[in-house]
Image (cartoon, rainbow, N blue to C red; front, top):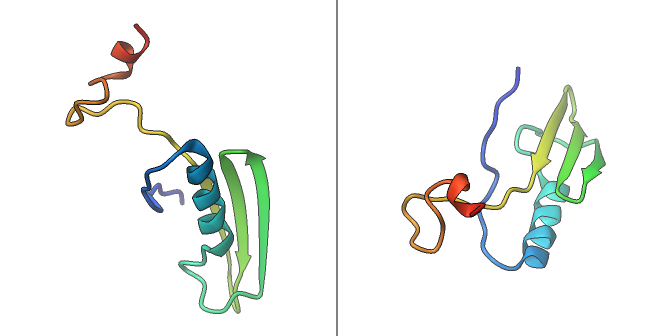
Length: 86
């Protein structure tokens, strides 16, 4: 079963976002009571697959860093991505 949830939102430069993203990926263990092993696989600079072995179960997570590029409530961003490409 797959689900998507936001791990965190943060502001800053691209470099700051990548640093914070890596920190959160390296420490994420939301569902695991006792971490026995953590495997982190880089898919790209902006995405990782993490497998965490707990005492009784194995949990797998896919993390992807995204940049907000459109927002109807932000005066600094376009309403849609089609407006951004102009």
